[in-house]
Image 1 (tube, rainbow, N blue to C red):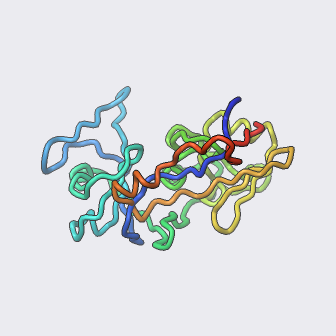
Image 2 (cartoon, one colour):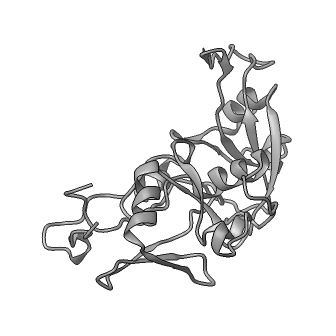
Length: 229
């Protein structure tokens, strides 16, 4: 992990028009009913999985608000509808003010599949400062360890890449989350690094997506302070 720069705001491109109901397909594994076939393929016998986020109004054809293909960016409503034509859909209730996924979940030690999917959809990336790996590559970790009273619930679980999960455990960082959903990592030396929550909606247009992409900070910018872990 040496050479990593200061924590970035882990922002993902998402789109205009906030809607309280957002549809996110868990699986899109068959050709769409209209247009050309959508070939997703399989790996080791498992059906491919893609995540698309779009307002329920666009899914139903009431408007043409763009959708978002996870890992790619904005796509047209028509394309999103074609891909999701034979998909398994999961209804997500979002806060129309800031797009954050509203809480639901379970309280068992091992995160149930539904809770794991919830965390992956909500976090989108590893929640370690400076890490941009997707949440699908991460482990579902308890912020407050289960053995220390932490629950297996949305407000105590998050996505952490394996190496960063281990760093959290062995370096004994102090981790707190404020009422706005920002997580603060405090190192043994007292350095504090924020990781802000990912917004799922409103979804951005392609132009807004480009305008809001994260660019490297200029030389001398205090954000480039080396993370001491």
